[in-house]
Length: 159
Image (cartoon, rainbow, N blue to C red; front, side, top):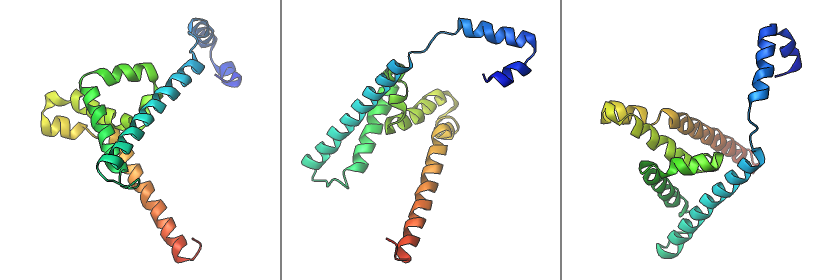
């Protein structure tokens, strides 16, 4: 907490802040960053292997192999989440599993599993995209704005 804000607190709150600071355990930030980096990188390596598999065995190009690769990664993530393995990996790696597209798949299937007792339509269907809905919305909106800017720049002869 900033020193100016700390001075404005009542004495009891200042004592509590000092007590809390003494009791707080230090987080191994560097170690957590390394774990996130290597696990996230390993997920990306798996994605590259899947992409290469589609290119060599199914005659995709580098441009067209992206969609089935992402779908395969999300499917694998959903299987691992369903069996309870992805949560253990995420506990170990932190943001390393949340940042790649696998984090999106995990958030969708976790919401679906959590609300399955409420039924398929209102439970699974209604709650599946609560967390992921904002990601989809802002992703589509951002893509629209970028495409609009690119189209205007092409029309004006800049690109």
